[in-house]
Length: 187
Length: 388
Image 1: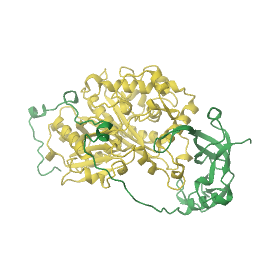
Image 2: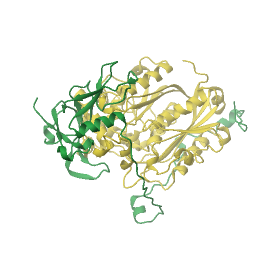
Image 3: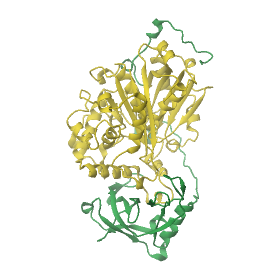
Image 4: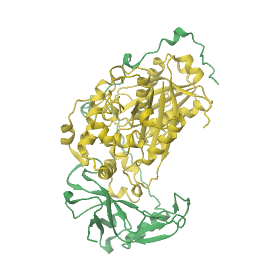
């Protein structure tokens, strides 16, 4: 095909107009942070004000209901036998419905961790946060993101045994934060 | 597999990569597209379709970002669409354009990638919060750097890799970028500088990370017969591959990027490559963090699992080494305007394979190269194989 104005029948000489990057200067005008703060350049500011009410969904709804009751809930696929957490309504491997909720223990091991001196908006903190993937016992090597607490950073190890530390039953809201953190435990 | 038309890259353009550009995204895109046209002596009328890649709308606070960028992308009254697969977007964009030409639907396609991250205040990191699961991850206040720290830790632990071996990637790429005219944070730094830099989320430190950037890139694709009319030295896209793993990232072992390996295997099969270590002359794997270059070298099968740090220590990945990696200077040196950074790697393959990389030129007349990007929740690999 070819656009209405396309013209490919150039002479060989015309091809020689090619220029390589080594001859071309990349464009762009870099600004400094200061230029904006001191209003040396014009900017327009906007603060979005939007609100969302997300449906928890069937499977995560079940998970959050469990957390309120102090239980970690997973799901089992009857086809491949895999037990996973967070639970889902369907197995993405076998692509079939898995409405088979499984009560899991609140213990597991540290799959991986970080010692973080920054929060979500990169604010610096003195006391580090310790985000980790906690592999939950009784699953097929599945886990979720949470924090480790009650441990000094230099004592952390991958494979370390941990147990959920729960918020008081009366204060739980059906949220991932109903677990305060996971703390080291002896098996 | 059946490909109707072999696809060539015939032109490329790039802006400076900057922490804050005065230009809007639309203006940046125009500069890159104009340069790609000028570099190949083409007119906008010669472009039949336009494929644009750009990452989250949340950086800009502009929905319909594809449409917003349209005029600058040279897409006025043309078949045009935008793709987005997180950090993988920059190398998916040429694949998106490749569909247009390989299918025989169009003879030319302008591929454009843009990112303007500086708009989001106080820091675009805040916009990244919205990629996490809104029910069970966002209430914990996660940071994108956390999940990379978690992946890096798992990778280091599995292969017993010391931090020093990872930090050497940052030293190499920042130095390579000194020769790139678009570079934002090219610098001579020592291994000790990296190891002494601020700890953000251990094992990730300040100098392990690429910067926040504004910038744009463009390449022009053409079918074989048309490409030969445009230039005497087309560079061919001989393999494309992409693959996504589950969004349940906490259910996977993060030590190895299987989805990158799957994407690479798809592209290698198409390009007739059975032994990438021997048949690929150099590579531009995605390096937003220093460990990612190593992780991706292994995913791309350019070495065995856990072997990339050793090869780097031996100098194999230097520009004059046996397998140059990120000769451009990568995201760690040139900068990381997300989608544009991925396409910058494809531009580098184009210039290197044409012998037009100037001071960055790899010795020994390289013939075959691979570029790769990665992103979303550590779950996508996008790969192209190019030859001269």
